[in-house]
Length: 485
Image (cartoon, rainbow, N blue to C red; front, top):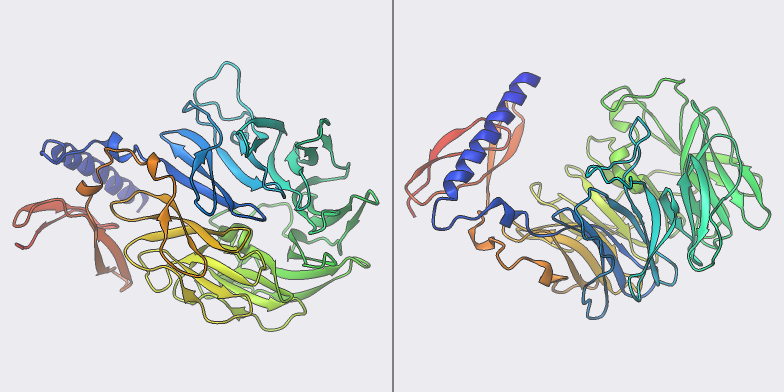
């Protein structure tokens, strides 16, 4: 089967290249360079307060941070890296006052301990945490490291370096320092809302603990330590409790990514007064109910109303659920028969904006749902797709990425209360981008051998009455004749 798939992919590529080369000979031809000339956006974030937002544009390999601020949301380029050097930018975050954008530049080490350096830069490459000033774009390197978490009250940044947690301050002229010395590999920092404590994960090989570092007392408390694998700490709104995920120990053997063996998990809530924890929800012991790693940060979040929101694939679909921090029966927040992809919270943590293919299995649209389990309401619909929604810190606007068959992915903004959306950074769209020459695909449904309905897309590229070979997603070539219109 693997050989058949490989050959099918090979012949698909050959066909598409031949078809594209033929298309270029027509009067309406365009080049691959034109299609790839539009910058691609990613990693949308919003400042904790106000109307400032930031995202990443990959402009033909040149990765930079762009920003905008309401109410006009005029976009501007914040960083100015001019080379396609293969160095990634990720982990965007604003400081509490919105005056700095923290980010990571550079990729992680490979198994040989080397940083990615695809251009063979003789100066070498590294992965480091930086901060760019909103006012003038001045970039300040904080330290080598990754996975920064910005304090909710000031400009302190905790990050990972050498499997330990370090701390740096953006404005103060102090050298970065290791936050504390403790056994194990320490990672996954999570600030308390007051900024006075930090939860983290201490990995000890075949098990792990969730610890809490107190900045005032300079002490560490481990929450209900056991031989299990504890991870993903989340603070309650009052900073008195920490929720986390507990997975049973499985020895020293790592689980393979394609292993279908059950990997059950439970949600624990620990009280900081004494550190004891109690289980409030447990998954079933089957493969579908295993921890949904694809949910990323949305595996577990603490929401308003003393509720915990978590992701699960227990019915074969990645969905969001809500459960009381006291325990009880979870309430589904997103529908079955479809999956959410991205999710973010309104600043008051009472509502979730999520991107999913619910209601339109072939596309992704935005919806809003209350964390207490009311029925979701659609925000967007139509022929386009939308993803990566973020609500501005003043709760007034919703920003997201959108594209359709003829318009490349770009950032958009619309009032959270409803209304029309408009594109940000429209000036970055190349003047010769061939929008009018791109084809709108047609949905094609067909049955697999086992009866499963497969969704494919047909990209016709011929005039009426002509025969043309076309490629259906998931099938081998077929020849059809387009109807005469």
